[in-house]
Length: 420
Image (tube, rainbow, N blue to C red; front, side):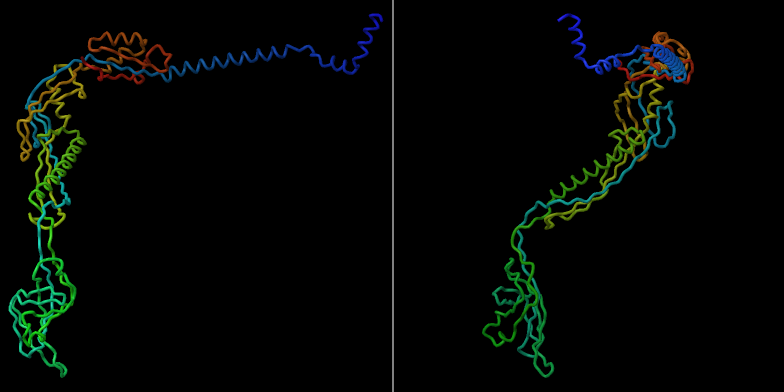
């Protein structure tokens, strides 16, 4: 078979329609002109947007420009000693006599608290009660001497504390009825066994006489109070311990209230200038038989205080000329010489120490650095003798210069630096 015939056979195998579809799906030549135009339009928009953003940033950097300047002054330690006078009768600080106004703070507290009685005592008590004694013997009244014995049906003996006279029998509605008298009787011996219920009584002393069956008694309520054993009682030590406990609580409470009042008014309270007293107490007597008892007390706390601001005015007068003191660094050693709560006067020997620094005109500093570059402004500040360090922060962060407006530059002293 020839080569022509072979080619024909290969072509004949492929279906005509399939060949046409393959040809039709081959990518056509693209038109690049519209795509190029679209990209050129996009570049213009991007450039315009970048330009707008750049303008916005420039405007923002001017409109919102701000600077925060923190200046650390050169600080040194300073200490001194002088005598101050506190007087509640003056209204203003007197720097010539080193006298400052004083104020009296007062608080009254009361408390009632229960305590157990620790004392023990062996006690015995006789039961008591009321019986009705009958006279069914004669119409005449019959006297019975003191300590006459009455025996209960169960055998317990009770006695009349005093002499009694039992009325005679009488006629009521045509019948004889015995006369009677209600009397108090006391058990012959102490103990709970005499706390008996209602019962009948005979008189042992009349045994063998005609009177024995004609004189008798009965009770309508139980006998009460019989006891023999150990009971608690209040001792002198109990009362002293109760007083110490209650008074200590009241004094501590009063002290806290006074301290809070002093703190709220920014006043100085010295421990020697706080006086506390017990105004009244109430408690049972020593020997009172009880398991628990109440102790009540009332105390008064009074303090002579003075304002911290007034004290600092005196301290400022003791500083070297042109210096100020950092109040948070102040340390005090108080030595009260006398305190008179009645007159409201106190004399105190004061030693103090703190960090002092030069008096710096911040407005003048601001004028020197307005509109300056950040590095230049820092050099200007740190070159001044009264300044040891300066920190400058600007906003927005990319700005290299401080704003030229005074309102946009905030300057303050940093007094928290440690002084060696």
